[in-house]
Image 1 (tube, rainbow, N blue to C red):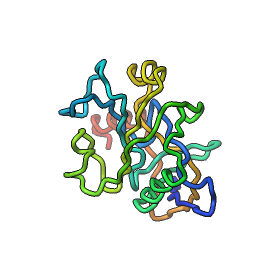
Image 2: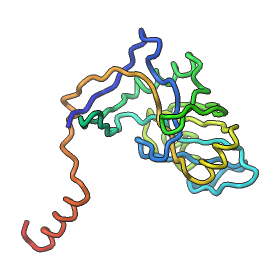
Image 3: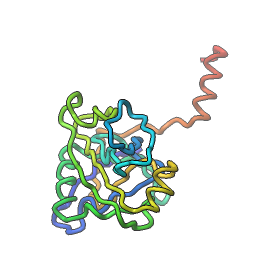
Image 4: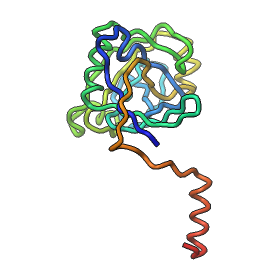
Length: 200
């Protein structure tokens, strides 16, 4: 399956990250957490009445293959550390920190990115304090949720679980990163039965 590295086109005024979306199933497979006033002891955090209403999580992880299917064409995309860093900078330079959507469909108000950083030391980074285990070069964000409906109906109920970025990038085919076709769960079970029967 083809793998594309997505890069920035800074000549395009729309290039880069235009919004962050709240989603139920983040493509990077990392859920955000909802912060309370006190610092949590682990990644599992219970929501309280006196919440700060801040969501913290990874927005982009470097070199992590993200599955895509566009009009039946299946492929993966990856972001390099350099692209993630520059895209995170342009996100603020172009004043997109209050642009947010729900499931990449509906624009929502009352959400603002209030913290943003690139993980440069996995042991000393703030993300580690909150129980995240992310690689170097990860873009972490914290969003303040002032929208009562979003907080009550979507965050507190667990309807949304993570961040997903929206933006425009240029794909470049990476032959050196080409991935084998993924094996589905059914095929895995069949192979395991065959192995247990001693047929392979």
